[in-house]
Image 1 (cartoon, helix red, strand yellow):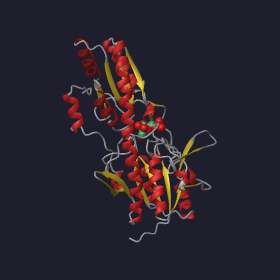
Image 2 (cartoon, protein in one colour):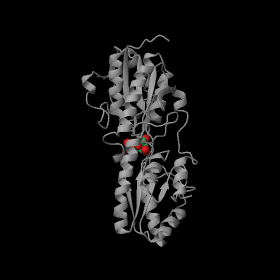
Image 3 (cartoon, rainbow, N blue to C red):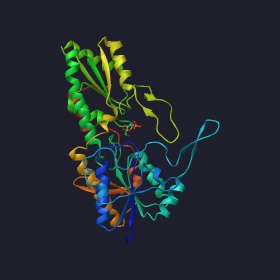
Image 4 (cartoon, rainbow, N blue to C red):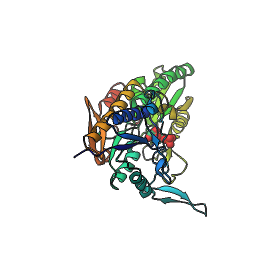
Length: 364
Ligand code: F6P
């Protein structure tokens, strides 16, 4: 297919992840070197609602940002343009589809292709724009690492590093006070952060969205340790973990145009452990600490590689794909395939087997 790309846009959508700026820098520089014009869309698609407001991405605009957390374009994980919340005079909110407004602006501005840097939600949205005629290359971002078709997403390695360091620190204070520390980490549908940081830091219990937990099993592990003279325990809980037969711990109601907020499972587990074992138990929520700050070397490198590959693929005439890490290369997969399923932790994966061999309890 002949390459007709001359002007591209980049956006960052959903929760931020360390490495977003590195992707923006790589896409911009590689595209400028192709002789293309590059624009950033502020805050997801927000810059294309109403009067368009794009940020010209020049060589200067992306200088020195590889190691900087956040995103110079801003991001949102609410106000989906396909389900845009509009307040009514009676106080209620209705969902309005504003995607055609955005498509009209893409055409008016002569944007030939979009590099959409996002997780499952943002890439699903990008696919809906593909169906309306936009050319898209997706770049897999999320600290949760729950996108299929790529070995890893950028942002995950940094988040696991932050969680592991926190767990190491909590270990010594838990031991000093002979307490149970329950640490809630991110991981909405997949427990990759909890599993990797938990195993790496030698946690005693790891609770994942993939394995409904029985609190009695968790308490048995704590009491076993107590009997063997280990008077403290570390429990890592993914925010999306739930008890057998029970539901997710959420905060507030589901709002139009955004996913329901998760949170509270750490507190719930800590309270139950304290009630059932009599051991003083405290909950710590790592929350957005896992998303902020400098990307790790690994994340910077794959972010830069993803960004450069996205431009290379557009230059080769490819679109409606997602770049994916498939060591030793970065390949592309159809966008439809990339969003077709969530990559949860396989229960027979080697890290789970390792954890079980080391005596770590999953509450099952
Ligand atoms: O998808 C990444 C993620 O970090 C999830 O683990 C979490 O549920 C969500 O973002 C929280 O996003 P926010 O608090 O920014 O709404």
